[in-house]
Image (cartoon, rainbow, N blue to C red; front, side, top):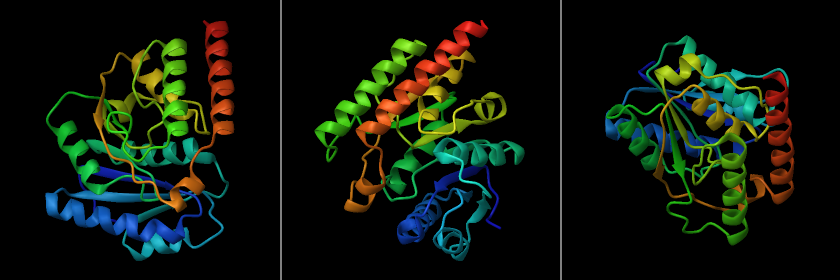
Length: 236
């Protein structure tokens, strides 16, 4: 069991044994330097490799799914844990090393000093190293999120997000796939909570590129978002 603190670092993971140990250890060192007490929680989404074992070896708390629920489902599990533990701040970050530990620390400090409910680490505010196709795809999904749900952020698909206690206690969403990123923004706006962004640098390696979303995923996300919006309008 990890060390409890006011902060939860949630890492959804599916078959990330190759890089997960380095991601966790880098985060642990950064937290120690910043003197931030936090619990690192790995949500193993029914991996078929040694993801859970690698996480346990680092001392992280591991929550294992008996079924593969997808990125949204794994993130929801981690956030529910943070809610039950009554933590002040929850951070979600990718397992593949795409997010820098120093950017996570900067986000935590920003949350501690303000009244933000959902803080999104935006790669589009500092897009060095991001391919043109990824920039275009992310901006397109951000625009669609704005059109459908009436709230615009520069990087609606970022996996680095920070949640206040208020958000943890009251936010809920239905999506299990990658479309949860946009729905989360929508639900935050519906609840009249404060959304903000801050610039982060995304680290792209051959490994992270092979694991990331492609343009077809983007098409599926758009379809799911339209369906959810239509269902909500009909229910209303």
